[in-house]
Amino acid sequence: MNKNITKVLAGIACLFAFGVAAPSFADAPAAAATSAVATPAVTPAPDAAPALAAPAPAPAAAAAAAPVPNKGDTGFMMLSTLLVILMTIPGLALFYGGLVRSKNMLSVLMQVFMVFALIVVLWCIYGYSIAFTEKTAFFGGFDRLFLNGIWDPVKGTFATAATFSKGVVIPEFVYVAFQGTFAAITCALIVGAFAERAKFAAVLAFVVLWFTFGYLPVAHMVWFWTGPDAITNAATSASETLKAGWLFQKGALDFAGGTVVHINAAIAGLMGAIMIGKRVGLGRESMAPHSLTMTMIGASLLWVGWFGFNAGSSLEAGDVAALAFINTLLATAAATLSWVFGEWITKGKPSMLGGASGAVAGLVAITPAAGFVGPMGGLVIGLLAGVVCLWGVNGLKRLLGVDDSLDVFGVHGVGGILGALLTGVFAAPQLGGQGIFDYVTNKMSADPYSIGHQVLVQAEAVGTTIIWSAVVSFIAYKLVDIVIGLRVPEEEEREGLDITSHGEQAYHG
Image 1 (cartoon, rainbow, N blue to C red):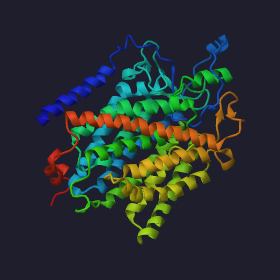
Image 2 (image 1 turned 180 degrees about the horizontal axis):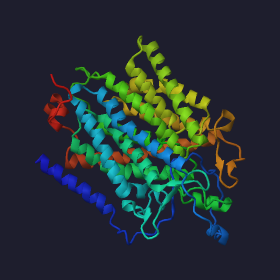
Image 3 (image 1 turned 45 degrees about the vertical axis):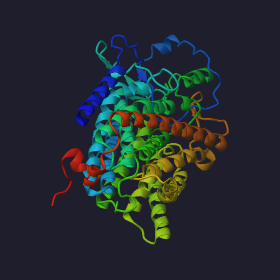
Image 4 (image 1 turned 30 degrees about the vertical axis):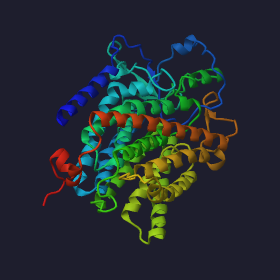
């Protein structure tokens, strides 16, 4: 019976994916030669004037040759994409795998591996189009279903994606791949919260629903805009901003995914841990990680891959990428130190698990700020992230009373919220940050930077992400529980998911 239900659900998921793509290629509207971009390294001033109609381009401008991608930028973005893949498989998989008991090692590896593959496929079918084409402030359109319109066989040309510099573009296929890896790792992060007790089919079914209605709208709200090239004056700045995602319009700063990736995934994971319930034997039996060696290897791969995650979010191999690079290095090192020394003081001994967890906490917290804050701002964010996330996986976890198996909320949720809010503080030019970029003058905005105002905007983005993800997650878990059931039977959980769900073992003898 369970096998039949699983097959039915898999069929429904496939039909859903193709159903979203119902409009045919022939009926799809013609797409612009340059697509919208995401992860803003610079953001139009949030107090832009009301929108006015954009003036028609002058004949000379209309006849100007389209920008050509720079091979250096293209190579940089392809390398960054590969680094984000490395973060997920094997980085995240090994980090999570080492933290569970040996009888569940393969189940976690399988979940991360399969979620990554599933999301890449859905991303190319409909996810990219919904997240990064123009429609509403909350949800994109269907111009890029099945990646339609990027290659023009009649003209023999490829479409390009705008960056954050006027007249600078990258191949759109590279941008699609880069953003696809972000979507994949976000969904994979969730599984750590309910590791060792969830049905494999339920995990896949939930991910399809949450990716579609949880990840894609948040990515669109925070990151979508039409790019800088059409901005020539206050009127065009206002009109182009009004085409952007809802939180982007408000001026929310999220360089590489504090809200879209970490808070979004952490809330989904927390809801899953609550609704699935605690592991059998928690508090009575040992739940110690079976291989901190694997966890250390995974954390190291995450740190290396994160340079692609953060520096690549600049979309160009330039100064902002260099800033994001040094911030990723420094903040992570600082968080590692503060977590380990904090643990040493409170528990009497420094641990390898603490070092690995501190590094991930620093990576999470610097993500929204990486291209906006100066190195000393990054240092402070890292130092705070280590001690605050240490409290998140100890004090806060006890207060909540939730069995978040691998501390997804304690690290990614707490660290993401902290980083998102502190971005508003340390992006201030008076504190060494980048401030707000004005595309009308093509330089930093002359308006005074208000830390209080920006922190409030950041808080609104955080709150919106928490509420959106919580509601979507609750509904998705409920639907999956009704159709499949979220949790394996107790006897299967005791035996271990490697054998009962996958028929294999990580270790023999």
